[in-house]
Every structure is written in C-alpha cells, then in structure tokens.
Amino acid sequence: MMYDLSILIPARNEEWLARTVEDILLNKTGNTEIIVVLDGEWAAPPIPQHDHVTVLFNPESVGQRAATNQAARISNAKYIMKADAHCAFGPGFDTILMEDMEPDWTVVPRMYNLHVFDWQCKGCQARTYQGPQPTKCQHCDGSDFERVIVWQPRRTRRTDFARFDSNLRFGYWRAYEKRQAAAGDIADLMCCVGACWMMERARYWELGGMDERHGSWGQMGVEVACKSWLSGGRQVVNKKTWFAHLFRTQQGFGFPYPLTGKAVSQARQHSRNLWQGNQWELAKYPLEWLIKKFAPIPGWESFQPDPEKELTKGIIYYTDSLLDEIAPAIANACRQQLTQAAGGLPIVSASLKPLDFGHNVVIDKPRGILTMFEQILAALKASQADIIYFCEHDILYHPQHFQFTPPAANAFYYNENTWKVDAASGRALFYYTKQTSGLSCFRELAIQHYEARIERVKREGKYNYSIGFEPGCHAPPRGIDDHEAISWFSELPNVDIRHSKNLTPTRWRREQFRNKKFCQGWRESDLVPGWGVTAGRFDEFIKGVTNE
Image (cartoon, helix red, strand yellow):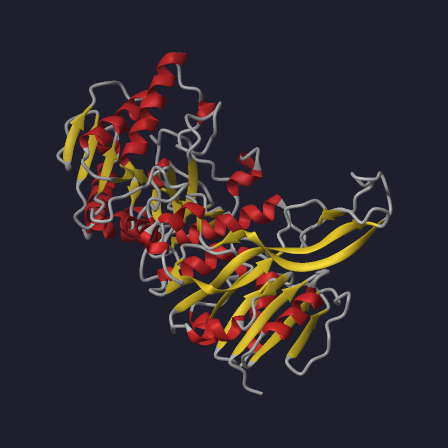
C-alpha cells in the first residue's frame, strides 16, 4: 500500500512503545503508516497488530541512527516523520502537518512534556507524579502504591523554540518567542529535539539520511537542524498541532541504549567537524550564516555579528629569521606557497630581522619562546582583520586551509590535517595533533589570549611547558583560559617541514610518546596526499613547489 506519511520509530527497551503506537493510530487522520524497528530487544508489552503497522526486528542492536535509516529504506511514502517511542500526538496531527508542508522544509510540531502516569496510594488515593515508585505516602504514611496511567500533555510545559550553543549543545529558547520572527502559526526554528521531526522522504535521502558516523546516539537535533538550514532549506515549528514527549530527566527513566560520556563526546566531536569545520559536502551555506540568521543566540555571546557586516580575514606570519639563513630554499618555498594559497588575504609578518613580506613588524629580541609569543601578539595587533590564520615559516599551506571560516568567536579552531615531512630524508608522517601553525580564530580572542599568555610567562619568570603552545588545549590552571579548542580537517593537508632548527623537536617513532593518545591515526608514507612523493627527493619536491 502507498502511504502519504511513514512514522519511523527506532526502539530498544522502550516501556511505552505500545502505548505510543496506539496513540498514533488513535489520532492520525491521514493515510499514515507506522514503521517500528525493534533494535535488539522485543517489545514488552507487545505492539498491537494492525494493518498500518510494520515491525522490523534486529537480533543485535545497530543504534538509533542506523535503525532510523533502516525504517526509512522500507518506506514508500511521500513524507517521513521520526518519532521517539514515548510520545503522544494531537488529533489529526499528521494531516495538519502535511497540509502545511513545503518540499524543502523540516517541520516540528509544538512540543509539550508528556505526563504518562502517577503513583497512587492505595490507602488514601493521593497521587505522586511519575518517577520512581515512592516508598512512603507523604499524606498517610502508606507504603502500597499502584501506577495510574494519565497519558496527557502537560499544557504548562510547552516548547516551541530551541537552539544550540557554540559547543553544539542543545538548549531550549523560550526568550525567542518575544521576537517578531517567532510570531504566527509557522515560524523559523533554529534547532529541534531529536524526538519528532518530519520532512519529505526524497529530501531525507538527498541530505544523506542520518549520519551514522556520529555513533548510535547524540546530536540528532543539531544534525537535522544544520542539514535543514545549511542545505538551503528551512526548519520550522508548526504550532497548529502538537506532540508530547516523555523526558528522561528523572530517576527511573534510563536511556534504552548504552550511553557513555565517551560516546557523547565522540558524537559531538564529529558534529563539530561537520558543522563548525564546514565539512559537510552538501552545504550551500557555512554555519556562520545560520548563526547570523538567528543572532543574538545564548551560548554565542562572543559571536553576535552584525548581519550586514562582512567578516574580513587575514594572515599573521611569524618567523625567527633563522630559516632564511640555514635553509633559504625552504623559507622561500613556504612564502611563495602561502602567497598563492592565501588568494589575496592580507599578510602581517613578524620577524626578528627586516623581511620584505606583507606588512612587516620587526621584534628586535633573541630567538625564544617568549619572543615568539610577542611576535604573534605584535602581528595580531598590526592586523585589521576579524579572523586570523596563524602561519609559520616552515609550513606549506594548501589553499583549502583558508576556505574554512571559524563559526564562533569564543573558540580556537585547528586544522589537524597536517603531514610532517623530514627535510633530510623526505619521509612523511601523519598523526592527529593540534598545532599553532594550523590555528584560526577571531583576532580579538587571540589578542586576549596572547596578552594573558605573555603576562603569565613574565610573572612566573620562565616558560612553563605544562601550559603548552596551543591556545585552548589546556584548561586552567594549566592553561591560559577556558575557551575550547575544536578540530577540523581540510580535504587536502598542509605540510609541516621538519628541519634541524625547529623550535620543538619531532618524534618520528610511536615509542617516543609516553601517552599513546597523542599519536592516534599514525601513518608513515613516502608521499603526502595532494602534494606528491617526498621520500628521497625532498629537494626536488621543494623546487616543484616554487616551479623552479
């Protein structure tokens, strides 16, 4: 049978699944079916048999995202709606939502909290709101209780609007209701919960379905929102109808899937790479566009851009001037490549000797760590750009590095796609690491950081290696501030040339790392992707960069 709408319910150990299915069947008025995926566990109580209900069973759990994709694959409906297995719906919700749909929309009904049950004292009939079974009645000291089903929306617990902050954490946004843009039955919605959303099935697959690289759980609302908006579409709340959701905020309502802090962190990190790193290949707009659209946004206090202002970009280039003496071919090649890759971005150079490169600032001090910090700060203050890319004298930068735009003004962004190449042998090495040479951020944030960094080094009388070189990679008391360091990856890498006078030594063997988490993704090669063979021919490789 052909349906207009398929409601997809991924479920595992869900006590209220059968009741959710019954509620949908009772309240739907359109040509709507339900597809349930029992992900590793049979339903208890069982799902009622019905002509418009299809049940899939996975002997082993595949995860919420994969189960949602699984259900979407067997749908032949024009629309799909993903719903949690503990929800109630307003009368005719499906028909109301379909009547107002547009092809490139994602629609979310108005949301209420769901009051599922009470505990009722068998002695005095007093009721206690849903949660763990009480041990003693607060009215008569009785200890015998029965569960009474309520299954009604809590009308005083309504949510129409939501957002996410610069750490991509979901948040409710009641204050948004005061804006003119929030008026009307249908209004723009920055973000949604993952509990209920609807779009055309064809569009769902055009946007890639649910991205299973996130893992089973987490960031679903952010993923749906970013895909909806950044693809050039729209996400809205339809206030003409509603759904009610049981929130797992009380003791006794656990998550059905194993949920670890590591899994949540991995989901958020992948999400940051996609959206803050502007790595989603289907995006028509960067995340910055979405932030501008809804600004000001709680959690983006340091990034409240003027929607009419075009953010400017610039480069700071810092060198100890020693490379020009010991390896002029490398120094010249890196500057030539930087000029080409930057595509006309203004460059401020900070050197220890006069240098004809961009707008030059000379720091007449001995080579050293504190001097390098002072060079960086001087270059930052000399620049007029809103966004800064940190560039070092022995790095070959790929043009893709400068296509990334930091989406938030209160975080440090690191391109971790960097290969190290030994100038002596040409051997190439990759592992995940944040380097200052791959840093980009808003200039004002960088100035604040380096002023505080320099003040601390001077106050302590020496450089303490525990604070590291990379802003944001250590929180206080080790670090300078508590702004976050966020990774992203360009499609093609930068090349970090390792030579005899690098300020920091290179570890070419994994055994040299006491903590192996700092050499994850280890790869050795004779070539660098996108750049060519380097092993045994480093001099030729450098000449190739400068076309000599």
